[in-house]
Length: 354
Ligand SMILES: Cc1cc2nc3c(=O)[nH]c(=O)nc-3n(C[C@H](O)[C@H](O)[C@H](O)COP(=O)(O)O)c2cc1C
Image 1 (cartoon, helix red, strand yellow):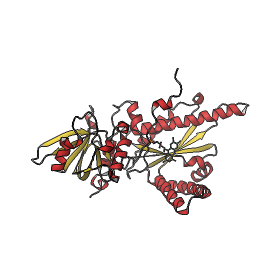
Image 2 (cartoon, protein in one colour):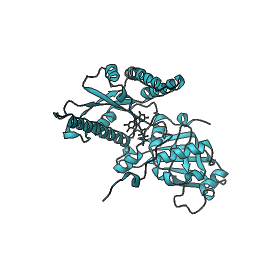
Image 3 (cartoon, rainbow, N blue to C red):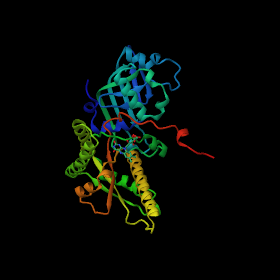
């Protein structure tokens, strides 16, 4: 089996992973074509399509696409973007072989998790009881402005639902202009008295990130050892975190900056000011994450700097008034993330209504 990562180029994989709908073409034994729109999730070596309960009147096994795959596993899947501005048109077509994954296998379970991570609607559908179509790509063809950010035709709620934490990226550069647009969004976050108590450090160079990873790793190693973790687990976790810092195309360090806040004579109100500043840093972070998603990127959040701010300040030579709080990773997702935490129902979250 060939890996998608090798069949698809970086731009193609990045385009595909961000599309919400594709067209799946199958053919029966006589070669009669059949094309349907499908929701799908991408992994390194396969593309997965659920056989769901969207209002289908027939059992999954009777669906024409399933019967076709059983007769003739050759398929094609096309994801495309249409915009009235034709300079933004693009598509990726993948040709390959389809397989039906039966429930109760590891790959089926992993595919269901991926699909639920990408489409929250699947959380309440019993897709785990039906086979999942796995397309194993063998060839890919692409055309058009794959790299352009999607036109802003989806509403902010779609962006909110689409954003997800990504921990593995393609080795594909993020243009400086896109990083600036992400920070521009962060800049417009609400803040206490409009004081904007945050500053950003953009970390692109490998040597800089290595210095940061070494400095934070030292502190984390000591903390994990203090927690009584085995040496093997300590090393594995440190390596994972280091890989994330080095592999993400861009890191943005969010620092708290308290110098412009109001000053109060009493400690309680001063604590309130600081809390508001931290709340506002969270709002700036979320603005950045949503803008990045809207611009075709994916993101991750790493809390590590919060636990060793002095080490981060030293490693990067930042001013002493900056308090490192969080690292955002920015890049193009290698695939849909393997798991996504389900959300609690709203009824549980709304604790008072009158
Ligand atoms: C304050 C904060 C700190 C976080 N720290 C980390 C972290 O250190 N490492 C990590 O992998 N994810 C971290 N996350 C991401 C969460 O794990 C993630 O948002 C959550 O699991 C929900 O998944 P989703 O973002 O894909 O919806 C953090 C998120 C927040 C808001």
